[in-house]
Length: 355
Image (cartoon, rainbow, N blue to C red; front, side, top):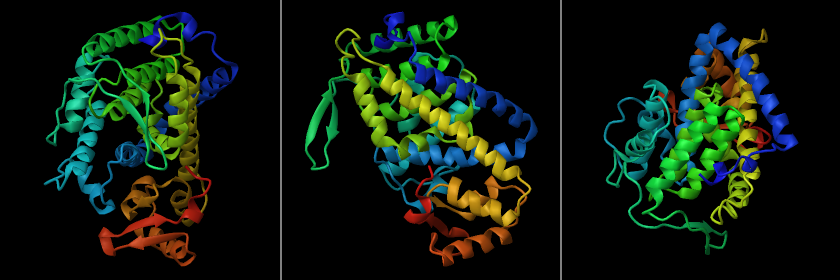
């Protein structure tokens, strides 16, 4: 709620942020055209973004699973879960799918709690309720030492703060005086400062960020994983978030623009990647060139042939294997396993410069 206390907090909008919003708005208009013209390609992009989002958002919080288990854990039937990481990984999948498939409607406290319930619903942790005791946000330095960044809202005050934040967010979105993506970014900042849960605050916030942006007409997160882009720039994410949280607890005397600028930059990057993938997949170039471009520029760091197949409809498995063999011989990718269970990985040298 602190970022919505006064209109002066979000106005005037810095010039560089205005430029970012113009870039995003232009790209969002083109996205609508592609939805009607390229349904098969967009379906493949959705499948890829879904897996990337689950993997990256989990990894930001240190929740990592074996690459050979990712396909199973992101399926509709994950089967027996081997540990807590797998439970949270599959739980994030359930929460993400709920937002994309169930049309949950307007933002409300019930939705926030339900996402948390889905996230931790496959494990033995407390779920679907706000924190029962006060917590701290702690930074871990490279030498292993810990430093308190800030003390969030108290447990007793959390329900009021969350309800007030939702009320003010919905009012700002309805009023339209402030660009909706600025409102979404301010909501994410305030929710992270409130820190309403004992665990899962970052993941619930990222889920809601993509969801609210999509409701406002900026649906690129369905095709390009915002979570992956945040993971790729997580040091900058933490730095800008830290800059915007300073003063938040002193009656809202904080600067929200470092965080807003960062998040809008990732959304703009997502639209840029979206256009690149559309151009790559619809170009008249040789199919091997399209496969090569996808693997080196657009695939996840670790991928399978099925990922390439989904992203490039109409390209045969034989063509994909030819390119994989070529890139492997050049040392640009490596392989783990064989046959259908094989996973491929870009080497560091081949991934430099690509998100």
